[in-house]
Amino acid sequence: MKPTPKPNRPFFSSGPCSKRPGWSIDRLNKALVGRSHRSKGAKARIEEVIERSKSILGIPKDYVCGIVPASDTGAVEMALWSLLGVGGVDVLSWESFGATWVTDILKQLKLENVNSLSADYGHLPDLAQVNFENDVVFTWNGTTSGVKVPDGDWIPADRQGITICDATSAAFAMELPWDKLDVTTWSWQKVMGGEAAHGMIALSPRAVERLESHTPPWPIPKIFRLTKGGKLIKGIFEGATINTVSMLCVEDAVDGLAWAEEIGGLPALLERTQANLDAVKKWVDASDWIDFLAENSREYSNTSICLKITDPWYQSLSAEDQSSMAKQLVSLVEAEGIGYDFGSYRDAPPGIRIWGGATVDASDIEALLPWLDWGYVEIKSR
Image 1: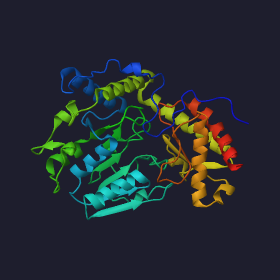
Image 2: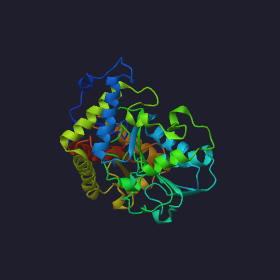
Image 3: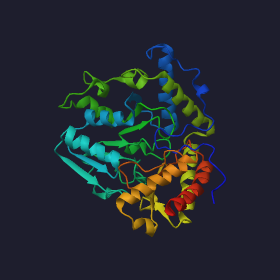
Image 4: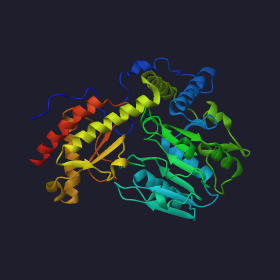
């Protein structure tokens, strides 16, 4: 039987993610369109995004935070190109984006003293093997694998190298130990449901010291430059962006941050995200055909909730047929208008990926899940 209840907002994409509850295009009416992003009013609006982000996230006062080009990807690559090359590097990967940073470091920057620690989808590398005498590059949450690091206890306070953390699907949804993170990056279109194309980067005093004392041996494109004449370009962290930003996107980011403050700040965002994971956990526990892709429950992502089909009948199919069935399931449920864009990432094992970030209501996930049961039975019976 087809379920009856439907999600009020059937948006479960892992990026761009669902807008906040109550959002409408009218919220952008005050956007300073047609104005220079260097003008006094526009710059103040950009600064507002920076300051509100720092306040909600609890970023330490001696850290700097700024808006940079090209989303989280640009922010991470800016960090890699600007900061690496002093000594060795440990780079961790357990899904596609982490693998991209491995490629950047080995094949683009062509660093030689590199220790690459990788794991298959569903697992973390052995964190005890990380050498913190080196710089360390890692994602906090594997957006395409649904596997996160459980905490920051594995990062020593007295590390010699700097840590570069891609936190795009973790910031605003998971506790981040700022004293353990020297470079942290994220984007507007993930947990806060903002518009795409712009990234953010937060730098510790240790990271700033590295920037001002180290000149990389390779050319640095303009959109990656954080220093001039051996000194940090402070304007980047005061609203003077490297290149032109969309004031519509800025206005949307302000709206999302204001909503976060209204509902109770970071604790409320964490609570909403955990409620989404809890809803999926309850369903998985009662299911006989699906499970988390992550093998360790302490490592379950509460934003990019990745699931695999474990039904023995499905497992007996060829890899091609398994992939086809998973895609058919997503298409069938989408055709009913129940949920959009919740298929697994193209490089990940076939299955389901439900975005559970703070802008998603747990009631909508709860309404989606019975439709997945229905859809699987329908596909299996064909």
